[in-house]
Length: 296
Ligand code: FPP
Ligand code: MG
Image 1 (cartoon, rainbow, N blue to C red):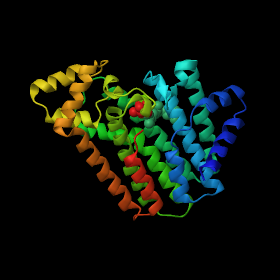
Image 2: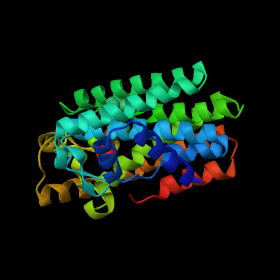
Image 3: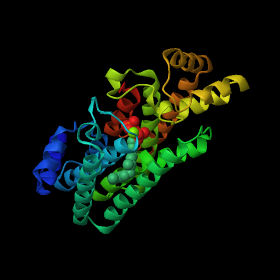
């Protein structure tokens, strides 16, 4: 099924009419195509859903190109990032090409769909700014963190699911709720994997979030469980390249206080909420379960 979307993505990027952009895009590895899969599962496999899925994947790819520049990331999906090999300027411009092409294709859809997707991209961009802002100091506020996650990751998935429902005459509100909770759950799993998985599996450096200044959910939960002395120690490690014994200390403390398990339980709860919203539609539940069990 996803073949059709891949073809559609290629068609759109070729249509840009600039060989260099196409070549660079070809070098990006596709990723999990979570958003495209959701759209096709909700809306069925047809021309319109393939175009919508391709649009959303192009927006997502553009956002990652820009995000890697913002995060100074060297690796993406196990390969050197575009900013690492071609420089930040090229990465930004390729992102611009992809997302403006995606936007120009949105006019093929009715106004509500175009508005829903484009507004989610504004939210995503605000989320990215909040993420950068929050990373400047040690943020232990779970609410602020979850709000940022919602904007940065969940809004595009929420919009994609809602629009896929609109395309096929399904009740968009329920699918929006499904997408939102799946998106939040997905990002929490991502945060956990940053701590528990290795670089080879992740395709990007492990334990990198905290070094980048990102105090993700397991760190927030850990902070809440620590005594004042240990709290101060954790704050000191924030935003710096960690030594192996410091990584060990964090991991041991997280184990001791069950911080990862607590974050995982929260991801599970959100995932249950997502399931309820779609009344246990088997194929969507399968995507959720796979997402919860993923190791990369
Ligand atoms: C990855 O977060 C980043 C996002 C999900 C969104 C980034 C959004 C923008 C840069 C806004 C610009 C949007 C467009 C369409 C140009 P992460 O850094 O936590 O994840 P990572 O570890 O995979 O990098
Ligand atoms: Mg990043």
